[in-house]
Image 1: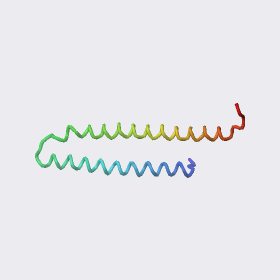
Image 2: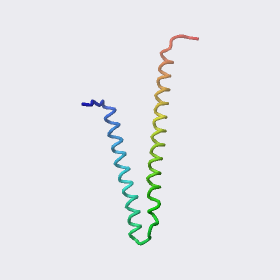
Image 3: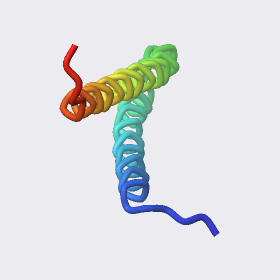
Image 4: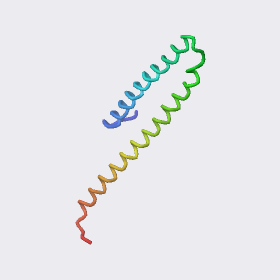
Amino acid sequence: MISMNKTTFLKVIIWLIIGIILYFVMEAIIGEAVSANIGGQGKGNDEMFPFYWLLIIVGGIIASTLSYVSWRKYKGEKNEKRVEDNDKSID
């Protein structure tokens, strides 16, 4: 059995909530595209549908990468400050 600590569990819950929100946003976009086609406009929005997916995927990857990098920088600076505070030697 896999054991999860509290922070890992919270991260999983947060990502699930984000996924659910993205799902409903995509459903709203898809619903608008379908209702526009039912109105007799032809294939106007069908060509834009893959673009929305591409936009969300690429934007999500970029946002995730920037969040991860900034978090690692924060942790690194925090550890660096802690090491400097604990360093008792004077050059």
